[in-house]
Image 1 (cartoon, rainbow, N blue to C red):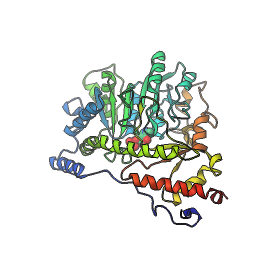
Image 2: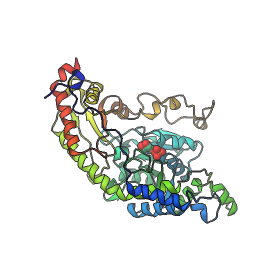
Image 3: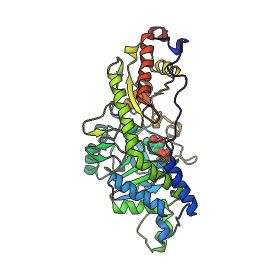
Length: 423
Ligand SMILES: Cc1ncc(COP(=O)(O)O)c(C=O)c1O
């Protein structure tokens, strides 16, 4: 075996495989068709027939309903704005609390703040990295309105348990399913189990249209609210003389071009997932044969979509820090993530409670805070982020079985020379 690259040897792979677009001739043809039609968006912000958008927007919504078995789909221009819409549709307002995982992309929590709600962070399960249902009830107060759970890395949250708790306390549940299209729980699609599911179509996701998002719900009233919020709904409500519905809208609309691309990508989802899952199985087997790793956990009855492959690293077995290992892997052409996004409550905006201006709204709506944001609030998240978790973005196209073999060749080289590397 050749010497490790970090010790001056030849790397297994000269360069890491860059992010590769999954666009094909189908997406190009779909865009050209829209361009030739001249209709790049058909939305109008009034209660007329254009309130719900043009042909491609309606087509992508129908396609999502069909693929995921949902009654309603509402296309939006990102999952970030989709989460904002979902939280607003659930009636979250000033001082309402929403339980959320702190181990996620920041948009999951900012959607709550944008509605002047207060995020309450619930620790994660140390094996699945999703919200730990056993930690939920301790944070429920009379102010709690909803639970926003994140299907992180592609694994659905423990939705059967979360839905049971929510039902008991009369709470809405929103699934942030940006990373887990096509994952399932007991045969049910992630993103359709809670009251509203939010999908992302941003450039780095399993399927994408550059930017975009889709909301799914079976609830007629929530669907209507989402449609109103997406398209300056106060105008339509005013025209209809509706004094009862509360919905401050915005422009959260998807263009016909983005919808056309998304339609083609959705057709490819199951093929992409088959390839991701085959590589993930190979990775799991590889980790099982080697010391010092705990491969991904997929609970009985769940399937994973492997947006990323998470693995726990045991620094005691390896005799080196996780960071040293990751540096050695990077030198071999396989960059790894150490941890994930910093626990959200440790970010400055949360620590200093400065959201909109010099005031501390929305936190100032509450006299006795339910939670103090600071180190130690969610010990499992902090341990995963600071010490144990590695994430590998190697299930995506164009990675192949041979690349995964090379990945483990790199690991084996580092293992052989671990003492020299650790010095
Ligand atoms: C878990 C999660 N939620 C929300 C988002 C936001 O998605 P978008 O970029 O479509 O706004 C992302 C994107 O990275 C994500 O990973």
